Length: 531
Image (cartoon, rainbow, N blue to C red; front, side, top):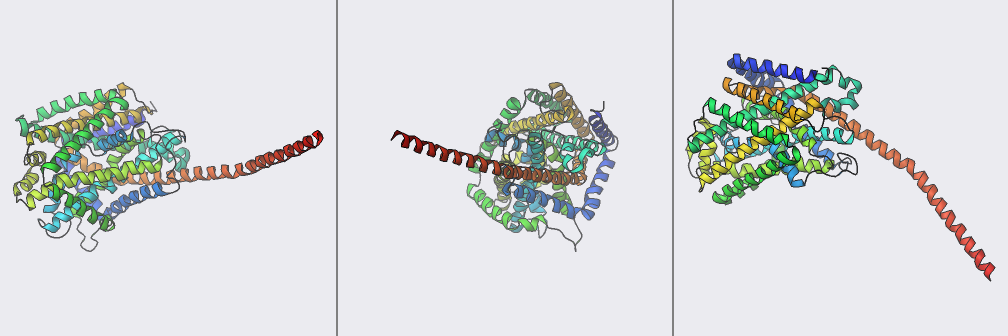
């Protein structure tokens, strides 16, 4: 019972929240929006901007520091998965359905309503692309990676269970296993469930819209429930086969499929313009990186835009990063810290920038250069169907739409099976959870998603996830202090061992040297005796 108190406590919190969302979805929405758009934006917006940049700085520092060569495991351990499979799994987990849901919509929405200046202009288009890179680039991936790095270090280097409270032991001592640790683990489970439930719920809505758009299947709540149940069966089946089979192979297939979709849009769309957009936006992103990272309006004191974009993304990245980080940690045994940062931050950031340049850049080109304002109107009216209208603008659109729907399904399955695997690890305190645990968590996630989908509470839950990033960011900072404390102690211990080994090496060398001199004297005596 004591071992399960964290899981039971977290499930009670989730049940209460879902009940509230079903009984009074309107009240839930108003409360969550007030907390994000008023309380946090007016009092802690500066903190969200500062903390997200701090995570980027820590990741880059540790990668290029003296600790970069430390292996996530024993010094003799080597990676369990190939580099391609590893990146495919972490990329599928970290972005999932969001890659399609926001790929076209976000640049266009910020083109219409930019953070500053006049909307629907050439300048607002450039600003929109830069901020898209900003939201889906280094800041988001660093937030995922910093949690994953510390979890992997303590799991494989120090031999701890895959629980966040164990990473706090170097800082808190035995208190990490008391009430503080239990509360931290409860928040972690709630963050995992809320983050993935909203992502999957919104994904089902978009898939349903795609089926209706392409094949005339009505996107009704009943059909959405059947779709969730069907997909739940798929991801439970995938999770039951383990990471080495279901999750790995589905991730590999889906990355190839997503790359194929992007390549087709690149070839069939405005190829030269996409290249120009990528190069130009990358330059602007690098040039304005610091300015965007610390951008606030202290004299204007109006943070409506940033609350809906910057503050929301950083809070949500922290909450969603709990699940992503724990999963990334699970698949990263044997890699060095430097390799981990390159593979979990820099490479995914670059890949995401290319993706948004292709989809978002093509969408902006259609609106600005080809005068297709209908695309902008579609995005404003219904983002679920806007993606499919966008794909219809290209040759071979039925093929593109079909491939996209298949990719959405696989992204759904890979995200969900990764989640139930992580929740199984957390509840059983093991790296290899049983299928019974995965099935139970799969049913929980499906039930929460269905309940909130029917009550219209998905968006409020997503907002609450962003709000939950505020307290959990303090936990991550404590994890960072604990992590560097452990790194420093390990480094000092290694240095002391080196110092202790020097006298013995010198003594051994002197013995060998002395022995060789004796041998030389004997050889001389033998030589003289023979004469």
